[in-house]
Amino acid sequence: MFARPAQTSGQGKAKVDELLKKLTADLHDEKLSAAQRKSLLEQLKVLGRDPDNSESIFAKTGIETLCEYGFEVAELDVSQEALRCLANAMLLQEAPRQHLLDLGYGDKAAQRLRNDDRNDEFLLSRIIFLLTYKTTVDLVELVEKHELANSICRNLAGHADRLTDPTNQLAHPMNDMAMLETLKLLYNVTANKPELAARFASCVPDLFSILSHQKLPVPPLQVPVSSIINALMIMHITQETCPTERQVQQLVHILDLSMKAYQEKELDKAAIPVLMVLRKVQEKASPDVRKSVQSLLLPNEEARSKPLGQGDSLPSRLLRLSISPSLTELRDVISTLFYELSDSNPTTFIHNIGYGYAAGYLSTHKIEVPETMMRADAQGADINPITGQRLAAESKDPEPEMTDEEKEREAERLFVLFERLKATGVVNVENPVHQAMREGRFDN
Image (cartoon, rainbow, N blue to C red; front, side):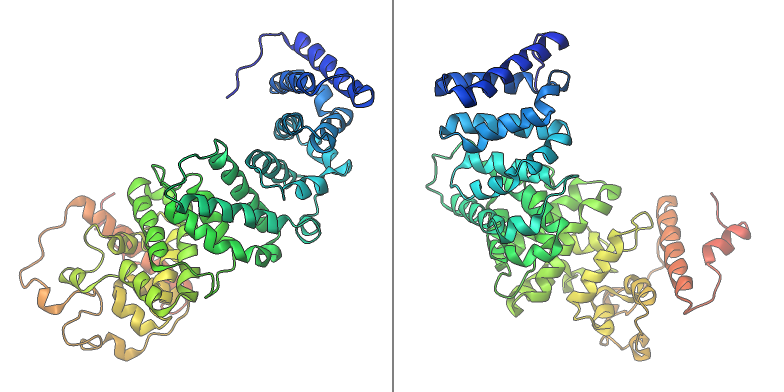
């Protein structure tokens, strides 16, 4: 947060009016030096952070003066100081965004983004990003006529090169902030106009590269990681732009860290973009990369020493979340990923995760299960088709008494499973949890 200047509201407004008057006059008189112009704009920038001071900045005439300094003046320092004033004004109020467009400077902002300058990248990406909110901006025209996609992809390629070069010690102080603004702009353009996503295809490998070399924040699903993943969620991923095995491992690592760092309810929204990107990747990946995804996300043979879903491995945690009663969206996304990693084959799906976890997804999606799958030998002589556990590993002793907490979790799981089954119309049986409550066999 910026500290407000010491002036009262009336004094600050009067000072802003005075500064704008001097700057507007000098556009015609040209009596001020570049240093004087920059000084006036710096003062205006500080005062303009307070909306109470900034009525004349927000006005169309104020935006016009700042646009002329930002886009028409030759001195780079002066121009960029004016762009900072514009970005602040556009952030604080909606009207300046439309004023800038009406004055014809949206096109000029996209054209200037072609410059290879990190300060320009930061300022212009932010300005165009703000134009995507509640304005009449024509994103198609900016992309197709003013090379916005090319500029964004070129800037991201530069950031990917920077992060992969271990000798690059003299980093520009604006590198990270400029990259973040570019990522935000990429997401907003493609989210608002999904049909333009193909124009950004060339930046997909750079996004995966940046993600694999970017230091992960704690917890992980924050900017810039969340911005990269959100952008990839919309991008077209092809065989040519699919990530390498190492890059996929980083994506899975982020998912793993997220499962540990966030509460279950937070994951219902936060983790979906990661899983959606993994779905896109596995669909287009080479056989070797796809096998890597399967080995990281599906239960392995070692997990079959217990009923699947027990333990703290990533596949086990995903399995438990896939039937969590409190997750309205995430559980279906997880099950869909498991199904697709099972070649969209119900028999393979049941073998991989067990019928207990697969049943709800198969029934709600009206996917028929071969009757032979439920035979004791359907998955081989030593696999329990319901739990996925090896038969030889099943305990011959009676199961220990469940704790109250375990009973409650199991009741919730059964409740959700039966409700999903009933909703499909495939079965018409009473939910046993309802029945138990009615008969007094279930304590609240």
